[in-house]
Length: 279
Image (cartoon, rainbow, N blue to C red):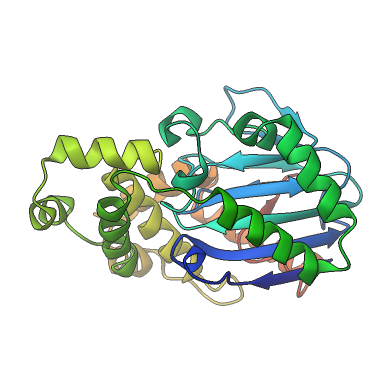
């Protein structure tokens, strides 16, 4: 697969981790994407793909692309034999200035880009992207579109600052202390987070802690699960295991087995750091 990525220019760099272009044959027809402290926008330029957001939600098809706010559960992506898209990996708070609705309305319920930006706008953008001369030109077009749509968002400074502290500590921070430092009530802070990110500060901290813990796992080496759980701040190994199953649907040992399978079958693949193959 071809993957081209770059950080956008200011002020988008304070909202976005990277813009990317992806094209080629996915390593597996179905991949699970565990929750990350991030939001996602995909503009699809190939055949439709499918997403299932939890066992209680039916799989839906996305032709023009999708918008995903910071999730609380794993997403299942179903890919066509060949995929092609451009996209945005937003910081948790970064999607809010581009949404016409509160992020909480989209929590764990991906929508099409058309539902967010309208059919004429996304149709025109897809046409321009499809005729652009190469990935870098496509990313410039996407960046320009985002700059054009960027708007002031009430409460973004508070949420961005608080979220940045949570991120810097890997989720290991007392939310009450952050609320006191910001000089707002717990209710106000939680409401702002749900409006702009889709989840509460406490839930975001849990996601950051889980992501940091998972990225510290070396699937190729021996793992002391008790030590890993303790170092990550979990009460005990049972608590860690429960959190793992809630986030991924897998036990920690099963997660490692699936990661090892990915690395064995597709060494060096650009998607091998977080998505998991579905049997």
